[in-house]
Every structure is written in structure tokens, then in C-alpha cells.
Image (cartoon, rainbow, N blue to C red; front, side):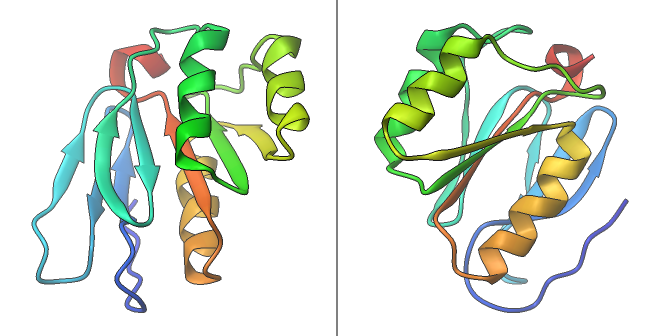
Length: 130
């Protein structure tokens, strides 16, 4: 599915498929095609997320460095909830946390970016999201 969003200069999802997510920052920016787990943040290019297929608590702890108000966990092609300690981690820091499949996380991330929210998307993509 291809997504078109014109407003702002944040990094946003332009499209996604079963094995990739395409991110850009406006029409002049190069496309970033992601095929492995990644972190999306409106203010910076996407970065790899070293997490594996079932991210451990330590992988989620690294996301707090961004100081988000909300984290969207895209758990791959199907909904897979993280261990309860992950929810306690974010709740303890006053950060919202939502789990959804990666496609839903991409769509939600774009909407929240358009609203100017400090949203971070941690996405399982490709083989990690299978």
C-alpha cells in the first residue's frame, strides 16, 4: 500500500509491504527502504533496531533515549504482545505504549506525526516480523 502525506518535514512512511517499509522526509529527500527491524522518529532518519523476532526488555529500554510521549510497537504481520515488563517499563516513565501489527503501526505513526506528536515507531519488518 502506498501512503501520500504532504505536510511538514517529518520522516514519514510513504508505503509498506509484507517485507519492507519505505520512509521519506518530503519529496526532495531520498527514500529509505527498510527491510529489517527499525525505529522511526519524526526528527531523524530511520535507524536499525537490534531486537530479534521477540524483542527482549533491553531492546525496548533503548527506545526511552528518544524521550517519546508514545511508542508504537509494530509486532510484524500478526499481533504479538511483548512481555508485561515492557508495559511496566513505559508506564513507569510516563510514556504511552501501544502494540499493533506493523501495517497499523505505520498508518498510526503517520497520523500522529501530522498532529505534531512525539511518537516513536519500533517496527518488526521482513523476516523479524514473520
